[in-house]
Every structure is written in C-alpha cells, then in structure tokens.
Length: 258
Image (tube, rainbow, N blue to C red):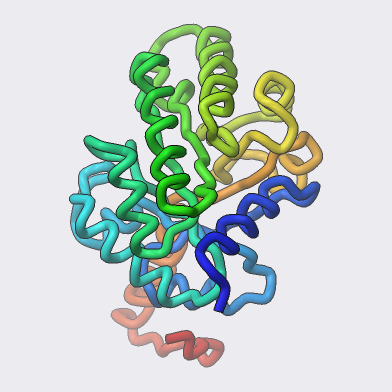
C-alpha cells in the first residue's frame, strides 16, 4: 500500500517532469474509477464545479462537509493514485480545510485567491503549507490566481502583471505551482512561464485554448479540464436520451464501466 506521503511525492515529481501532467477532472466515485482505469492516468483531480453541480449547488457554493465526503469516496475509488482536490477558496480557514482534506486521503489541492489583497492571499497559502507539514504530508499546493477570470474591465497588461506577482509570491510562500485559469494563447503563456517559472505554471484546457502538447512546449507543468469532462458526459447523456425518445436504441458500442 502506497503511503499518503509517497503519493504526495509522486504528485510533486509528476509536476516537475519535462512531460506535462494531464489530469482529467472527476466528480464522483464512478467517474474516478472510469478515468483511473486508463493506463495513461498518473493522478486524479477532482472538479469542484462538477461536484457542486452533482449535489445541486452553484460553483463555489457547496458546503465543505459534502465536498469532502465525495472527495474521500473518490480517493477510496482510485487506490494508489494520488488525488489532488479542488477546494474552492479554502473556505473560512484554509489550513483547517486542508488538514481535513488530508484526513480523507488528499495529497494536493487547488485553492483560489479570488483576488483577495495579496498579503491576505499569501497568508492563506502559508497556512495551507503549514497544515501539510503538521500532518506529515508534503502537500502539493496548486495555488490558483483569479487575475484573469475575475479581472473585470481592468487592462489586460495589469492582469498579467498581477498574475505574475501573485504567482511569485505564492511560490515563495511554499506553493508548488501556480494555476492561472483562462484561455491562454501562446504569447501570454510564454510570458507567464517566463515570469513565474519553468514547470511552475498550471493551466486549464478549454475550447479555444492551446493543446496539451503546445502548453508542454512552452514549459507548462500541468493541464486540467475543470468542469469540461462532466459537461461532455452530460452532453452524451442528453443526446442519447433524445435519441431514445425518438425510438432509438442503446448503441452496441456501449461499455460496462460501472
């Protein structure tokens, strides 16, 4: 049995490797087992948006207890694979949130800054890192900055400079890498990697974004997909339901994955 500390070390090595880490986000035990069954899967990432939607909550609105219960079920479903969780903004006490997440088997997390004042955001990163150390787990923090997604109407160059400043500060506070969500083109990605560090930037794969291979060539450490895998699955569900209502039949290619 792989220990939790060993899983955390594995996750850290995957981020540091020359090959970009691709994590397909899951939202419950069966989606986790389905992704974990693929030989290409090296780690599992939960999608906070998707878990919230599963229980009827808006993104960012799910109670911590419900989220952690599902995350724990996902950890149990995937065995020795390291699990990194979406913990929204860390809730009221990010250190305690991470301590509880470690308690259900998590070894890494995304935590959003929601553009809090920089000193406050850095203090929250420090609390997360300290919680991992106190629990004896080298917790892998993918510190998220919302410099782009919450930018509003401020000039782009200000948002880019803010993302770099925050990213550097979070790394100095003990974060392992910096998650900068948004549709990032090659030039913006290059500038982020140049400003934050090689293999220190994490991105999200969205329609219209670069491919994983293109991000890898630019020095990005990790690409995840947020709510998109669940949306693809729900699109397929709605499409097959519409086909069945129209006198269709279940496709013969359907696999028994549960």
